[in-house]
Image 1 (tube, rainbow, N blue to C red):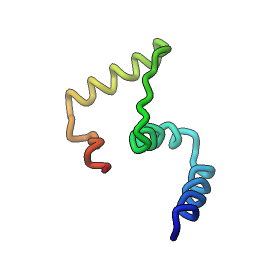
Image 2: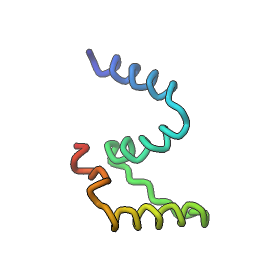
Image 3: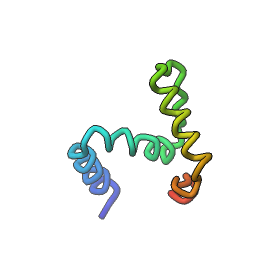
Length: 71
């Protein structure tokens, strides 16, 4: 399978994903693309979600997947 075919297959898969899955894979795709996203206009709700995630990580880091393991 060549690069163009793989790209087309990935586009087709992404088109069928539910919206919540898009939010889940965006950080991975951004990481793989080497262009970090730096959010500067977070809402209070987004800040709370980040703090909740950090709290969960502090309590059980083994339940998270490291970026290094995705390489």
